[in-house]
Length: 185
Image 1: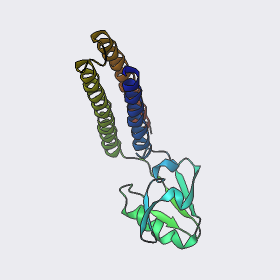
Image 2: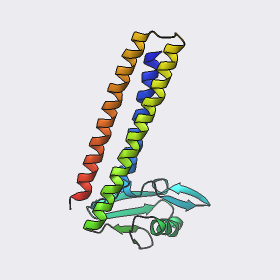
Image 3: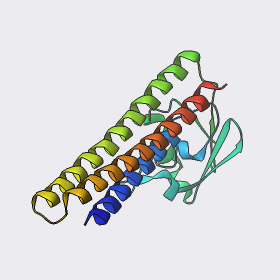
Image 4: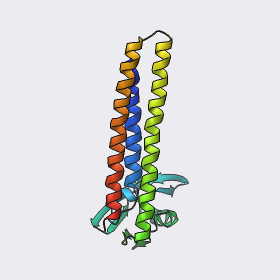
């Protein structure tokens, strides 16, 4: 019972870390990264579709992204989606390919992005703590219903806390790494 609860907790905590990694990948740094636009929703036959399903995205230079649509008729829709996004990038369309020049970030914008990174890491920490709270409640319910002993409850609580600490530490490291990436020119 305790092992099952801890396994579920670990799976859910890993999910929180993965979600944070995806969120942080989409935050712009001074460098071009396909992750910046991969999940950008593009209106395709009336359905919002992630850009990565409609085009090949590459970073041939440190400050340039190229987007080559599989279907050339989607060029305009991709261009509109980029302009409507909060990326602050202007697409250059040559009829076959969209080029996105990634400008240097201003100091003010870097600090805004650091605040955003901190907010996202805090959301991930809260998600991990919520998992801990839910599983802790389950463990107490098991003990109350005499499914597990008091000793098993305490061991389970200790293991749950160690698991939580490990994932919180991983989240902190991800956040620190992304902050450093945003702040470096």
